[in-house]
Length: 443
Image (cartoon, rainbow, N blue to C red; front, side, top):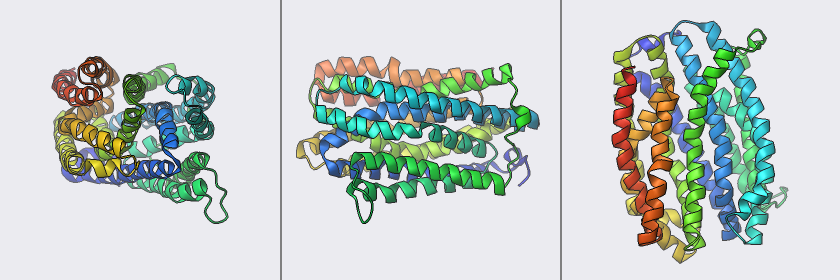
């Protein structure tokens, strides 16, 4: 495939070929998240509560890796579209080096803060103990996560979606297989409990990196990691962070939101904390297919923007939006409306938790379809290199609107008020997203 296919191939088959492997990857990745939680839930509900409390920090580490990777992706795609391979190589090289540095910082900081972090949300000593056992192992693999996701964004930037799909599949499937073996000690494997879930996660991530390295050596990319690109380039690094930091914040804000909502909900019952944790595990299954479409769109829209093909940019956005709406309608809203209790029942046998969780899912799902607008607009703006504008959308979805709404409505209707804050936020954010995107495209 030649280097200019992103601006020459018809838009529908182009976006489909770029997005479909990522949709499959995201579905498998979300399945792993659900299976991981399912096996942990078999230990006891305290283990599930511990996993829910560790999730915000774990998600922040992933957000840092993915968000900075978005900066790498956007820079490579833009420079390739503009015909500047030298800057594309430099973006890939500096992006990888900085990702490794981020990984070691995340390892040190995450492990250091966990005792205090867990103690802020629960007084149950067993939950804290389980949370520490899980987090101390899972965060040891933070550098591996950073390297894996840097490779993912580099491969995506040049259109190698099938390779990224296969690498992710290898890691996720390995994780799914290892989970029960290491948690319950099946066969000759040791019985490690919640520590086994963390170790399975780390091994899966190592396998993903190994697959990327094999591809990088055996099937050379249009961009290279080069020693000649190592010298400091302040303007390039600044640009990586200009796009990457807002993207990191976009992805990290849900962690901040979960911590805030845990504080609000814990005042009523720990059951609601468990429900929120289960919802965010399920959300990965519901939203990640749409995220797959956005990931497929991002390098295409960035390449065409760099090449000055503005009409194609507009058409790519509209098609991606329609695809996201279809997924959120069929795969999100209908599933939660008709099978809410069954979905919650995958993670707990407590009837009270299942009833409370089923109600929460049905209420929250009413905002899924309209959320497609904000999700697509935010992803498109990242692909265009407009990180600040993308961050504005995420700030509305995760801070500016939902936090005050959840706090006020909880005082009126308890936990049910918190669930209603989700769809209210998505409606207001969608309206604002349309205005932000249209205005940004004119500049």
